[in-house]
Structures are given as C-alpha cells and as structure tokens.
Image (tube, rainbow, N blue to C red; front, side, top):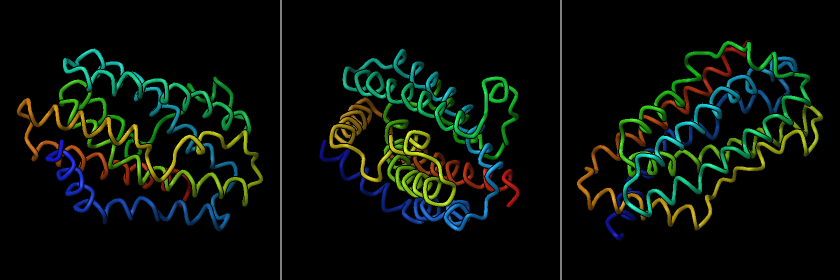
Length: 223
C-alpha cells in the first residue's frame, strides 16, 4: 500500500507539465474568450459521444479480466459513472440541437480519439494497475478542464446548468474513495509482478493522448 502511494506520487510529479498543458489548453482559453463559434461546439460533443461510448465498453472488458477482488470492485464501481456521463452528454447535445442521427453520423477526429483507443488497448492487454494509475492521473487534470469548460459554456454561450451537467460530473479533486481504490488496485498489481515502468508508461501515454484530445477538438473547431 505504501509502495503504491509513493509510486502514484512519483507519477503525478513526473507528469505535472503534461497535466498543466491539459488544464490550460488553448481550446479552453478560446472558449473563455468566446472565440469558438457556437455551432462548432458540436465538435466536442461529437468527439465525446464516441469516446464515452467506447470507454464504457473498455471498463466492461476490464471488469471481465480482473481476478483480484479490489481491482474488480474498482472497475465495477466506475462503470455506472461512465453511463451517467453518457446520459448527461445527451443534454448538452440536445441544447445544441444535435439529434441522434447527427451524433451517429459524426466523423471523429483521429487525433482526438487517440485517448479512447489507448484506453481500449489497456482494457484488453494492460493490467488493472496500469489502467487505474493512468486514469487517476488523468481524471484530476480532466476535472479541472471540465470545470473551466462548463463555466465558459454558461458564461459565454448562455447554456443552462442542465445543458452543462456533463461537466459537473467531474471535479479537479477525485474522491477519497476513488483515490483509495486506485491505491489498492496499484498495490495488487505491484504484488502480482506488474512493474513500475509499465505503470508509469501507461499513465504517461494516456496523459499525452488526453492533451491530443484537446488538440484535435481545437483543430476541428476551426482554430
């Protein structure tokens, strides 16, 4: 447990620059300045619709692969959160007049989709420890980005709290329950022979691909 905690602290420190890039991405700044055309907000919705749908399947795959009890419990409990996020994304789509047909026909940007493709790879071929550690680092920076984007959509684009409920599902500080779960999963992984190198690599790559997500959305939004 102590070893897992130290490792997670090391991972967070090593990826601090990447996390800062994500928290202060030019796309978020452009939103706060009202520089993204309202009709191009559809890009974020289209990309996230593909991502969350894929991530729900990735969590299900990981649950089916988990052998250790803490790991299985961690991913089982995470799955309903993904389902709820998918549902609230529908409220944002509706507010922007994007129907199911539009969402299904949307062509994702390849750079923006690297994150979800790598998460699917981890779900099929990685260990629970690698995936949990990567998500732990990612969720903190993602939460900050979501807070900023939700505030910008309400303040600059006049969207309601209901329409932006998707962003309210994420916070800069993960819950104590989530953090404890990650430590237990990483601890189980280290005990079973998963190397620190693999865990750090998974976290680094997922964080890079998350930055790419925002890059892709920014590019596809005409900026």
